[in-house]
Image 1 (cartoon, rainbow, N blue to C red):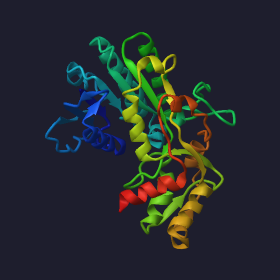
Image 2 (tube, one colour):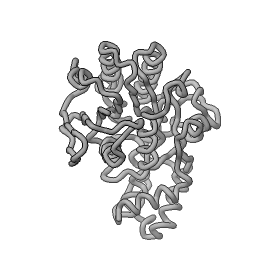
Image 3 (spheres, rainbow, N blue to C red):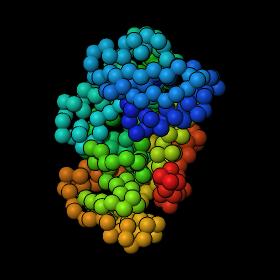
Amino acid sequence: MHIVITGAAGFLGQRLVARLLARGELKGQPLHRLTLVDQVEPELPFSDAVEVEGLALDIAEPGALDEVLDARPQVIYHLAAVVSSAAEEDLDLGMEVNFDATRALLDGCRERGLATTRLVMASSVAAYGGDLPAVLDDMTALQPQNSYGTQKAMCELLINDYSRRGLVDGCVLRLPTIIVRPGRPNAAASSFASSLLREPLNGEEAVCPVAAELALFVMSPGKVIEALVHGAEVPGEALAPFRAFMLPGITVSVAEMLETLRRVGGEQALALVRHERDPRIEAIVAGWPARFDSRRARALGFGGDRDLDEIVQAFLRERA
């Protein structure tokens, strides 16, 4: 089994690499080669059973993935992306990386006859927006209200059409907001959601840029990685007729997150949160829906977190 991961140096990419190497197989086949692609050469984990190679590539450059696709991988995880706030600030960059590079990847598969290659792409809750029902499902019309969501929605439609035509075997996972991410805040509009818990629990200050009543649809890093692995194994016929769907997250308000922080970290942790509304962040995040009917994902075998306490406890165990 040869697997390619774009965006492999990122947060999810690194965790996915570790999980795949720990498993040693995918779809019942032994893993023998892992190709890691990112703008900077990814750190290569040691493995005495799997050939691991790292490539520093700008996937937006024409032909950047030609050699990678010439090797005819069985699975491609497409995680590379310009995140929400950055895509909103720079339309051209977002289009080049989030959409143009995805189309080039699909056409590369098409040109090489990689019809059975499973392409798993990470999409986002940001693909939704506008005037929405109280509870959404996978067939709710996509009306993204920012460039990042629009670019992801376009990719979803393209992957579904290429799969319908038998040119590739696509599976698109719409990711909830991921908490609690380790490390430092990034350019994603949702970055504050992890920061609200992570920094105070580490004894550092955090800024809350949105109203306390704002609700988010969230999922833990561990459950997202489990979903990515499972996304490569779901039979293609079970994914039709539309191959994009929301993973089973949970709905939490910022107020509930702060109460969980107080309960776990005490008043001293809660006191480290400073409330400073940011209209730019709030305008992006407030347009993301927070309640989904995820029965389709669960029927396909995808699991989710039980509650916010479980998510926070998983973070604390990992940090220890």
